[in-house]
Image (cartoon, rainbow, N blue to C red):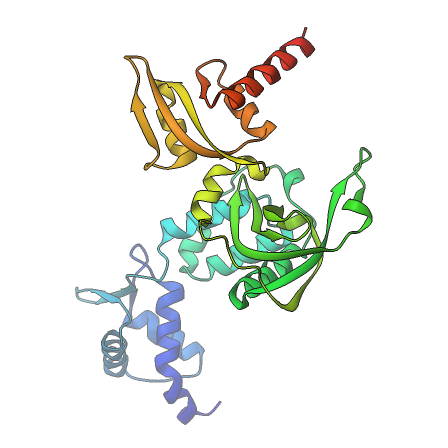
Length: 326
């Protein structure tokens, strides 16, 4: 590259140097910038560099100047600050959805958004059990396809698999093709689920994304969403993504469980004090063994008080579990 061309791109060189080599704890002087430009084959004066930095500031780059005998410069505000990048790196490392190979690639991309000094901090080692990391790289392609189908409001078709007792993957119902109208994606207990109308089920259900096989977008429009369907409410009501009939249930809870109820159903959950030690929560949930198991896990601190048939089913299940444990 000739000298003339180098002069045209010197602003880019300076911008790149400041973004990758400087931060609040590692400012750079004009002498440092001149040395970097020299390595790039660009020879300019100190006055020119100072003027170029002013141009960068005028164009919106947050270059901070510590004024002294030798002014020191560093990039202040970034698109993602270091604490935000650390949070994202930890999430990527801990995710059971993202493979080790993809985790490494994503963390490298996140580190590129910081200075080289900050990137070293991003190499903090969060303990992660490597056994929970998946080997299925196709899940990212499936996610992208589902997002496209949701945006285009088109049906998708796919096969769905489960595991045998010997941990072998097999297609459900001998490779049956599911015709599905996707409405939205949910992140629940470290897995992605897609919610929508299933032709074979005749209702809104959920499928785990990483167990979807051979997905295809069709030309058919989706079955319109039920008028009362709300994605956020649906996600709160379905326990661990196991589908069952939707019912409104009243729970009697010890006061210490208020945080648990809010975590599960949100701050706008319908609650009312009962006595000094208890409150009741009126919630809409998907009735399934998973829901009953959730209530049972609180060891009597939570109980179902209505409707009567749901309370009766819960008591029967609890007795069955107690009988098996003897």
